Length: 223
Image 1 (cartoon, one colour):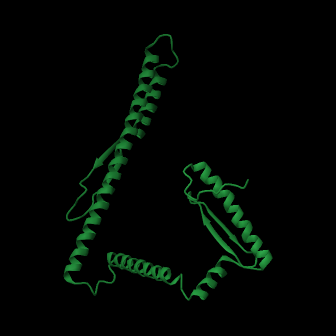
Image 2 (cartoon, rainbow, N blue to C red):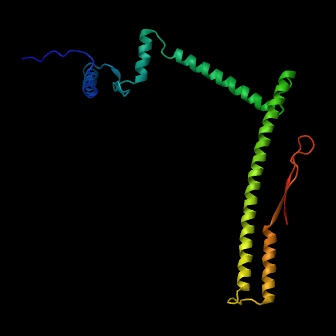
């Protein structure tokens, strides 16, 4: 008995569908290779599975580009003109944006101002004032953060110094330690107080705004 006729319709089972696609794809590629060898034909096949996987066969005597060029020449069509026109338009728009950004940068640096109207100059001034305010606010935030960090370090050093002095006094008052006499103790206290002066800082915060738009300064001095 002969083989039954297979009904041509979509295979619902994904696994069976993928197996069938793989087998028939290999069969088609084999037939294309036979045509290339037997008939000296130039064959190009492009296949994309339902999962998006790309497969291609091209005769060894040609290339995909040559096949597309032959296709355009035979049918009198241009496959690339529309795509090229879109690329040219995208390039033109990007170039315009780039030129505008460069011009804005030059104007913010005080250049290319001759062609601006009064309203444009006023708008540029307002934008620069807003930018300067943002930069100034960020600068003050950095200063405050650094100041708080330094204050914390100073407090830690003062606490360590106080603990050292307390340890000295405890050992001096304890009769079990008699490590130093009164003169040596006074010398040790003087040395400790000298070290304290190196760590104890006084942060003087002056007015940050002086006059119109001026900036103040922060002085860090030894106590």
